[in-house]
Structures are given as structure tokens and as C-alpha cells.
Length: 182
Picture 1 (cartoon, rainbow, N blue to C red):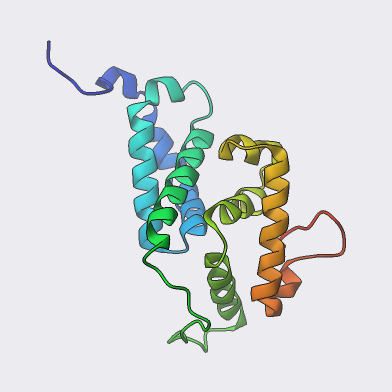
Picture 2 (spheres, rainbow, N blue to C red):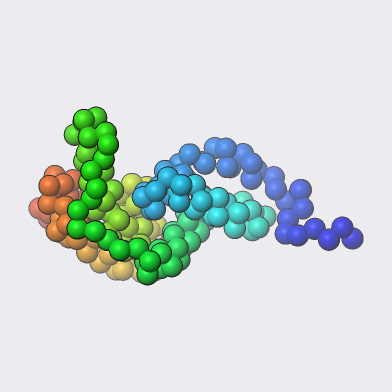
């Protein structure tokens, strides 16, 4: 007996192909969840590491949904650990490249506003409005009810309108179903 840990090589069929095919999309989602490129890379690596251990079971179903769920849960865990050491500031520091254009300034403002949300609220917004998942799909990924997704989305959008009113054109408060425009 060789004493292998986890999967043997025959169990890894398709894992490399999955990572190559979906890695960039997973990194974008992780960036939106964390707001930091380096943390996003770490989050994807951690999620893929956990997925790798269960690949034999995961590969037959929906591996991307599984990885997304792992990323969301891992990010919430990280957020809870970081929350006690980070202190939000009233004003975001000026960026060195402020003359790049209004789109960049808007993105920086949106990133700063998103960092003020709880990890769960941010996850709901990313899954609903960036990944374009339905409320049911978002609830499945987050392991909560559809009502929780609706409530968290409503509260997150309300909070974004409070902390960043200058980004108001991103949120349409005209009806009960609010969407973030891209």
C-alpha cells in the first residue's frame, strides 16, 4: 500500500481542464468577493485545494457551483477573522492615477463602498448581479433561504445608496426589485 492522501491520479480526470477553463472566471468572482487581487488569488487557491480533495464526488455534478460555494464560505470565514483587526475609515485615500478617467474613479468608489458591506451582503450582490444567478441559485450557493437572499440584497443596495450616493445611477430604487447596472 502506497499511503496516498486523498485522490489517486485516476480520480483527477478533468480537474486540470476545469481549472484552465474556469480559472479566470473564478478569479474575477473572488476579486469581487474580496476587493483585493492578492486575497482573491489566495481565495481561489484555497477553494480549488478544497475542491481537489473532493474532486471524485464533485466532478459529476456542478463543479463551478461547488467552487463558488467554497469561495463564498471561505471568504466569510476570512472576513470574520479580519474584521476585528481592520478599521474602516471615513475617507478613502486618494489614488495616484486619478486622471485615468471617471470609469476608474467610479470603480474605485464602488469597490470602497462594497468593502463596507458584510461578507454575506457582498456575496449576495456578487452572485445575483455579477454572476447573474437567480435568487434560488444564490440561496443554494450560500446555503440559506431565498428570503434571506432577498433581504440581504435589499439591505446591501440600501447601504450602498447611503454610503455612496454619488453612485446612485448604479442602483434603480424605482421598484421593489432593485438591480445593479453594469
